[in-house]
Image 1 (cartoon, rainbow, N blue to C red):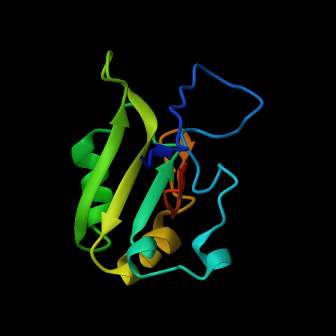
Image 2: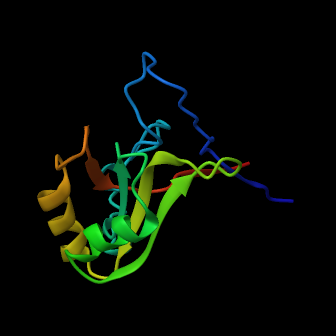
Length: 129
């Protein structure tokens, strides 16, 4: 029997900690990056993670901001399942890798209210046991 276990663990932030992350980062699981493994495909370059979003940002505002760069396949602003409050990060998947790159170049470092957002390529690492 083969079991697939995700190495991604839920992260909840209840204020400042020694870790400066706001949500998961693009590679915080000691997984090799696609560049290190030579497995960087166009698909892996279309998925972005966006950190440090304002907590009052809506799904529609998030989609509109990143949709202004190019055509989006999907996007998700991550919220607490119980309270519905934004956790301050989200994911965007573009159709075209060039749009994803343009979004990073254009929106990474953008100041929104009191936050400076961080947009970077996101890839998922998992282990087989």
